[in-house]
Length: 601
Ligand code: OXD
Ligand code: MN
Image (tube, rainbow, N blue to C red):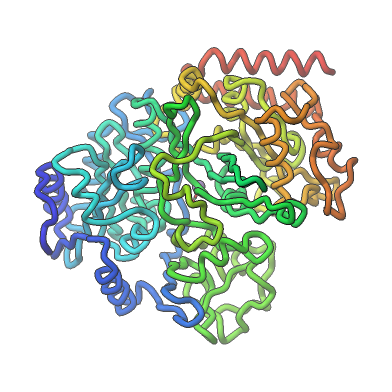
């Protein structure tokens, strides 16, 4: 062990137990210093765990490849281990805590023999702030250490802030054999504990992110009266300098990072509007003393999907990845020792100069969009980049109090049913709108087209307890916020009869945000429809858009009553699946929606 930087008995006893189980040769405390991080990078490069990229073009950047069977989160192997099964609910996988520990103990036993156990003390949110929660992750992976150094606030100051307290999240990660059959990501919310074994992929092993900041934090939030949500946070600065904040929840891979870093269309930027990013994935929300809801991004970096990130879709993200970034499972361009991914530009590295995400030579001429096996970068390849390198990072990112939220936006990928935007009629109705969020599979993805997957509040894989109880918590929070945000739903993905997207999306989504914010300030009217308030077409600004007319907007805003009634049937099935803890108020909202749709037929 290097110098033990704490005398906290809870911490030291736990580490001793975990070391007795996993039997590492050495224990190294991560102190958050640049020197230690640099030594670890050098070691990872020496062992081949990482490749140092061209330091002139990509200073501080590295490439890592995961095992080919270990490239994404594994929802089927993710468990919530509460003492009572019903507290985990029907949507989560559940295992009895004792049974789970006995099973996983066998997998961990001796798994770090010959290796180093790294002890990572980290904070979600700014150390010492009212929102801050602390964690310690034990891991045998340098890749995990280096990613955690980007994604969270790591260092000895976390141990100082923790003092002698036992109030921290205990995370144990071991790569073991990377055995798919024995891969487990398990949470013991009643014990503030997370265990992850047999994976090296980010979402399964960076325990501060989905495991802590969503699953465990949602559980703690319910107990303590706050919320942990799968939401981006952005600020729109008006020409007079005032900034309004919006949080938005979309299912994974629906463009949260792109919206969070949006570049305003010229029509707005010329007038002096600016958009700033506070967070791209997770928001922790608390009621402020002023009666508004306040949000912080508990993370310190971005773990973004690389494919599709380019100069048009997200120039700010691209710029953010140009330094101090770890790329995972992208193409290695050996001609100039840089990286590439599908959708970056039209200049993939030529055959002979390209190594694919599996580490094999890659021939871009054989690439077929419809056949994922021909990709150079894995479709879920990632960049881990520092928030402070983001050119549009809000200065409020560093504010321990967070930002006041004017609007909460839910969204899904719906080819037909959901209009471009609508507003709920109350907090309760807004929570209902969140509970029925869904995405449809499109022709762009493998599998059947138009299959609806319900993903309430974009939290389906991330709620650390029963989904019905989670909705009840949303309703309770509504009663505790004297001045709550207004709640909206957006859908950028409506398609025409040929399957093409109708709405231009990307920066032009600002046009919808401006309507949302105008509604929050009571500055614009709306039409009331069976599903809620829908804009008058002329109130969505189309100035400067060449292919979008007022009629296009009318089409995007139309509410197809029959399609919605079909959706109601699907929602009923889903509610039944969620089970007996669905709050009565949600069923009331559903019945009222159905009645309004029937009346409009
Ligand atoms: C996700 C992610 O899967 O953010 O939602 O990685
Ligand atoms: Mn996410």
